[in-house]
Length: 170
Image (cartoon, rainbow, N blue to C red; front, side, top):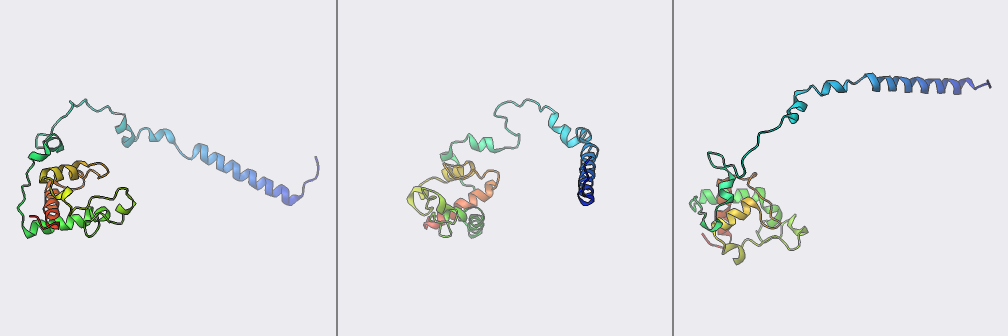
């Protein structure tokens, strides 16, 4: 055998020992089979019962709204300052990013869309029934996201009351 420099030999031996320790830890340090017995993993192995198509919850649910004629939906909330204020607050939470602070479709996020989001003051929006607006807000329309899981029915109807005030219509 040829003579190795003692420093190089020590460095190689140290690297070999580190590699052996790492390999031992990798092989014996984690018991992956134990994870299969975890109840969080087992829950995904259970098969869910078959549900009938278009199942409707006993106390309502979005399917009742989804299958309703949008024109027939009537806003149950009165046009009061309190309701309009609630709608304005929801507008600031959910709508201003796209439709803008003046509801003209020039929001910060909306600027990246082509075409721009709807101007909520224009006749195209204002001439729609409350039910049509409710339906589009709740279930989405073209690029508008569906907000049925974000906003309650009451919040959506209040938002529509606020939208009506934007063009002076109540």
